[in-house]
Image (tube, rainbow, N blue to C red; front, side, top):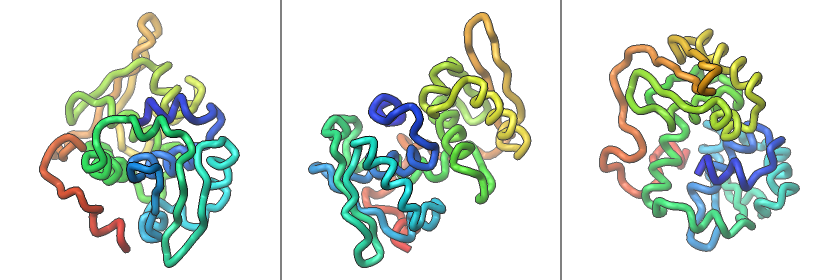
Length: 202
């Protein structure tokens, strides 16, 4: 879904709007309609961030219906999102995982740019201790320039989300290492129910 959004959204789309779009894409129904509870938006620190909905509207990606009964509703305008795999049940589990992308741990006050970078790294991590990917691809998924990505990787080290990272110019590969923590389940593991986690209905 991150790959899909990197193509569907303009490159200049802000990290916060990308995080919002990801939740909308993962939580939409078969007709492209999505309703996000106020508690979920509050937990993401996106509550009443009307400018983000406007940003996605101006990009032609969704049409917001407005706030009703403590929820924000919208209709996704790009029907391509409905063809993305996996199915809706797995998407809802992935939507919850995207809020807490194990094995990365971020401070609650981390800005959206840092959250999105951590999410991209977690999605490309083969184990609970390290990962590797092309710098160009990481930057594209985050909507950053490579230099911005490097700066954000430095910030992830500074807040102890990463132990270290290295860039190999000859292969354009960036490698990173996580602190040694007890591994947590990825979105494809476990048997979480298809219903939204309780925290989403605050």
